Image 1 (tube, rainbow, N blue to C red):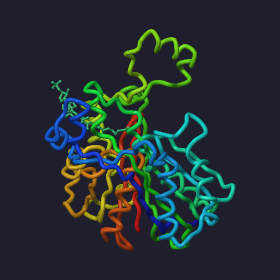
Image 2 (cartoon, rainbow, N blue to C red; image 1 turned 60 degrees about the horizontal axis):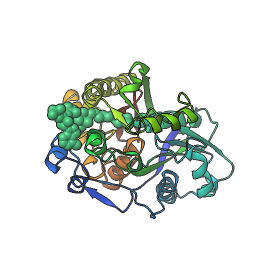
Image 3 (cartoon, helix red, strand yellow; image 1 turned 135 degrees about the vertical axis):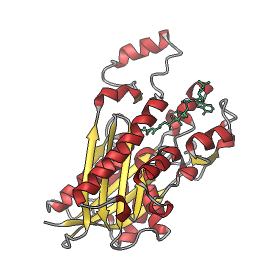
Image 4 (tube, rainbow, N blue to C red; image 1 turned 45 degrees about the vertical axis):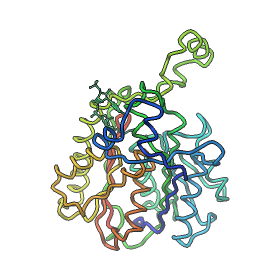
Length: 337
Ligand code: ACO
């Protein structure tokens, strides 16, 4: 058996910064409301002509991670790409990344688990490495959310939250099994699938009918993200804690032994709630939602990269990744760095 070692991290966000104040030009909202309810101060959004897409941002983050790992694209054996905002319905963004990086004709797997995407992707990559199937795996989370948001007052409950960006992590095979991922937890509850969803387009709505439907219902908004915010919030705080306790229990550890929790950056109030539930000190949790908003599958690798760059993660540290989101899906990964 082998273990997985993190040898490279990288992040990229578009240059355009969108402070809360700018949003007041498009919808009825305020800097005070957004800060108080979400903790967000600004986010980064792509802009027309800047060349940023889900895969190109992923490529920029990946190149940084590759350089830090001392690897070339040809050294990568497999790509796991988590996103809810692929460029196209199909093909997925993973193959676009494989081409842009100039990797060999390696496998590229897209993971469609929204906010929990990176947690799922990490667990998948770890299994491939532990089994000996692959040596070096590139795990990426990248999102362009801004092009799909309803920027009118009607969509404000969702639009103010989301940001664009990408994060990348390179895992490599390690013979030292006393470290690496100690436990994973992956869950879903499809009963609540429609509480946080983009319903169209989709195969359940034939394209020809959709065109007709939109002609007859020009006010239809099923192509914009719908979120039952309060409902999602209440489930998130419970499921976050459950997933974290599950991986800690599997590894025989307690919350006090965690060096750093990287929660999916959904809402600062959710992170603070989870911190209180687990009795974690401020130095045991990392938040950067203030600068980026909720970048869905990219939020954990962006935060992981920033935490590592800031010297908050050291060799031998116990680090937790945890997420909750659309599906509902949720989970956690526990690693001894
Ligand atoms: N600006 C001003 N007012 C607003 C805004 C806004 N941007 N958005 C909503 N409001 C208003 C509402 O209309 C409502 O007004 P009313 O009381 O007159 O009806 C009031 O503010 C309260 O609205 P709520 O929706 O109850 O506000 P809440 O405190 O729940 O915050 C939020 C909303 C931020 C969305 C919160 O519910 C949340 O963070 N939910 C969880 C998000 C999450 O974790 N998502 C999972 C990951 S995302 C993914 O997987 C894709």
